[in-house]
Image (tube, rainbow, N blue to C red):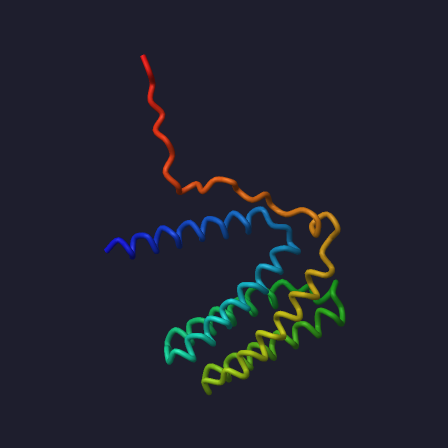
Length: 156
C-alpha cells in the first residue's frame, strides 16, 4: 500500500525535474535529452526482453521510435542542414526500421546496434555544444524539496 504511493511520488518528482529541465534547456540541450531518452528506452527494452516481458519490451521500443521519429527526425531542417540533415534523416529512418524488426524478432543485437548509433550521435552532438552551454549547467539543489521541513511556530 505505502510502496505504490511512494513510487508515484518519486515518479511525480522525477517528472517535475524532467519538465523543468526541458523548459530551461537550450535547443542544443533538448536534442541531447532526446538522445538520452531514446537510449534509455532501448536499454529498458533490452532489459524487458531478457526478462521475458514482451509487452513491456514493445512499449519501450515504441517509446524509442516515437522519440526518434517525433523528436530527432522531426527537428531536422533539411533546407538549412543540407547533406548532413539528409544523411541524419536516412539514419533515423534506418534506426526506426531496425527497432521495428528487433521488436518483431525479439532481437537484442538490433537493439544494441541502434543504441550504439544513438550513443555515437549523442557524443558527437555534445562535442559541438555552444561554448556558453558546454561550461554552464543548471545549479544543483542543495535541499530536497520533498524532505520534511521544520514547523514554523509563532511565539507570543
